[in-house]
Length: 268
Length: 298
Image (cartoon, rainbow over all chains, first blue to last red; front, side):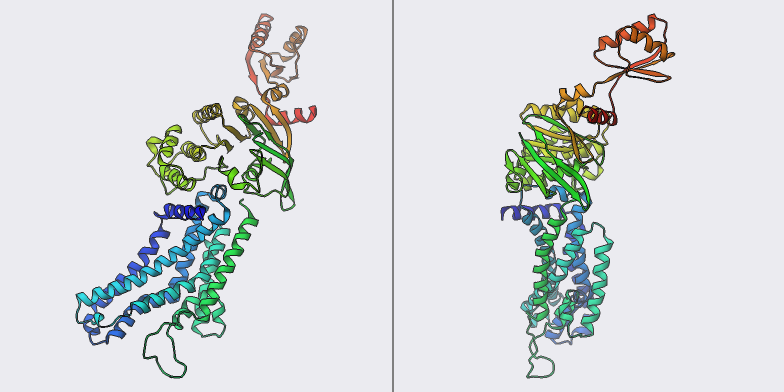
């Protein structure tokens, strides 16, 4: 456990000046500022919008972007950047000859990639709530203060986080095995396009395909009551849908398999 | 013995790169691991660090079996394999601090190491802007950070200028003086001869020779290379005066070197007999020739 914590701290120390780390902070910040600016400028048109709908419209700017292409691409990039630090410096041999168990080194690296994705999505939730409230204060005609959906927003982003774990584990392994940028990135990109396509066509088995999970997560997020047809009256988030379970299961299996693949491959 | 391997082999696919290797590295030695490029040196070193797992044979370091005591053994080893592994976006000091964090070593030790390898002034410069020699020195500082009992260095003088080579050589001799053991690989015989106390020679994955530096010198006797205007007359003259001539061609002849005194005597003898000497020098055998000699003597 000590080795794991030391490795995790070292991951932060190494990447704290890289775009991989700062991307996790800047991406939610920039998109939230964009959404904020749009609402700030168009406050006149939006002032008649009911508070709940206002919050939904506001948060959907970020959510729609993340749910379609951005989250898979960002996850692919994080998996690449965490591993690329070692490929570029030729340091695999050094970190695997430290007096620290290989599980700890490998596990800490994976956990750090998971942490970066978590950080990014947590900041999305935080910035959406923060900027929404800021808008409510700066433009009182926008009734952001009349409705609260902090919990639901956090739930949605947590669902997105869970749904990205499958992609992350696969891309992490690909980036670990291939030093170059194009192979894992290219494969990931093609798979993402395929994922978005199958998810948007509502293919019945799309929940089995990890690259479709972020989009699935958005489309299945609202809990619907089967007995009451039509749009739901209350915003209730359906967190644990079957695509989330599949994503989680894939992450665990690929993570464990990855360790043995890496061990078998040894360090060239 | 600090390192003791028995019958260690390794294959990449069908190609066997290390064949039944049995190394004996005594404590307090500078063990020169000599061989041409592609002989299996780096593969052997990677096996010693448990980066590659050998299918056959056994590896004991500090008297412990490597596979089952991996962490306790690795905590006493410092290593530098091939190119120094350095994060270019971090400064020299940050590179050391990162490793210090992993090895739980304090900042004072980091500063000591920077001083030892003379990088204190460049400590806050990005390591990507370091010259090759500075990178190599930083690599050595990284290897020394946990005050290891055994230092494993793979071609540490590769790409260094003569000054850098001398600095590293002096550093290693100093380290052994403090009770450490150094295992150093090289493809240059002259390099190893200057600092090693023990030598192992590997070619095509096989250990051809292992022993002390004196044992090696008995095999790899240097030669005197004499360039004259008339090599045939010179050779006959030397033979009449009981010198052995090992080789002769149109421009030069070779006599086994025994002492500086003898070089002077040969020079005087030739000059006094009206043979013009263009040059006379001590010459080491190259690795190829040494391999031939070792194979013959086996």
